[in-house]
Amino acid sequence: MASQEVAFRHPFSVIFLLHIALDIPVALQGVWSPESLPFLQLNNTAVVFIKLYAALAVGICAASLLAFSLPEFLPGKRALAIGLCIYHVTCSTILYNAPRFIPHSFGAFAEGYGITPEHVWSTLHGFVGLGFAVWWQATVQLAAAMRSQMLKSQ
Image 1 (spheres, helix red, strand yellow):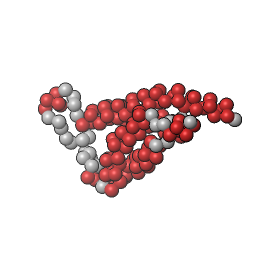
Image 2 (cartoon, rainbow, N blue to C red; image 1 turned 30 degrees about the vertical axis):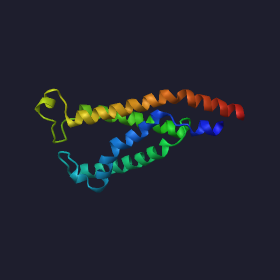
Image 3 (tube, one colour; image 1 turned 180 degrees about the horizontal axis):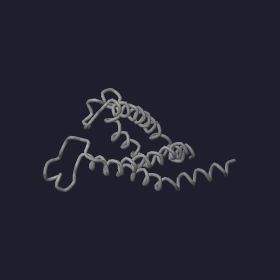
Image 4 (cartoon, rainbow, N blue to C red; image 1 turned 60 degrees about the horizontal axis):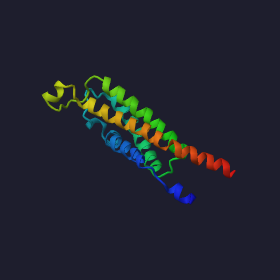
């Protein structure tokens, strides 16, 4: 019976994969060709910082892929989820308040409603951040139950 509980993966764990889907395109392009990213005013300093961010993002995506298949109650998976929640909410705020730096448009109609690439990217980060908070709340009872079960077995 215990092996069935450990093998259980909550459906909301898909948020770890959604994090990867959102971050990996910019991360990989940022590592290999940051100059080709569609950003304005890329000077040498910006390119170095993009490469540093991209390296960090690739590492976090790898950790997310590994954490996806882990049981929900493990402290490392839960710590990663909280860290990613903070990261995505912070990215959402930064991108929403950022000046235009992506020289693309969804058209005059969208621009009239403030729908810019920066705001769309911000919203996606916000949804993923919210997703990690929802995952946390959906699995907190499982983590507490496993903790109490482990304490009883000691």
